[in-house]
Amino acid sequence: MRPDLVPLLVDAFGQTMYMVLITLVVGGFFGLVIGLGLYLTRPGNLLANRGVFAVLNVAVNIVRPVPFLIFLVALGPVTRALVGTTIGIEAFTFAMCVMASFVFARLVEQNLVSIDPGVIEAARAMGASPLRIVRTVVVPEALSPLILGYTFLFVGVLDMSAIAGYLGAGGLGAFAIDYGYRQFDWAVTAIVVVVIIVIVQLVQWLGNGLARRALRR
Image 1 (tube, rainbow, N blue to C red):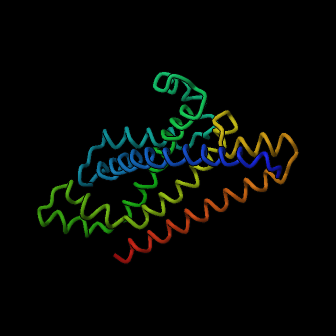
Image 2 (cartoon, rainbow, N blue to C red):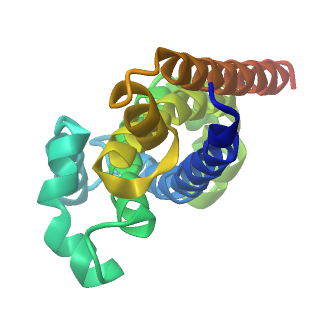
Image 3 (tube, rainbow, N blue to C red):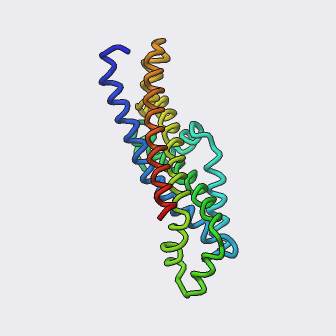
């Protein structure tokens, strides 16, 4: 790769990390909230409410299957109303946060429903409030798979950032397209691929380690 492209690669790496980290924090938080809402309002659960559960379930089912490229376009009017524009790194990061929230919500719900119901019933029998059960039983019991789910979300968000980069958000995806694919410089593409693989491997290693520690607590 040409030496003059190195600073551009560093900038692209920073842009990708900006989009990914903000999306993980915001999308991870709202995904956890929505996922807990789905779990708690399921029929027969702590805060059973068919209406709330149906609304959340339908919302997740509508957003989650939509390919991210189409979702970016469909969300355009909402993005313009809240961010002020439909282009640029902030606009695409907003769309990534929305998509990540609904994707992670389903992962959270699927992990929480695997908790042994006997543990929940024991806590209820001792008079614990729903909030206390969530804080001291539900989340700790599912902490290890939730960490692995969060690690899985990271990879998905990295994919989203590449698509967003292709449409003008910058980052490693845009760098690979502009200086690799369009200029027939396969060394650039190869370096970007290696950088992404290294990032994913490091995050997976960190996620696996944290999950093991949570499992042995």
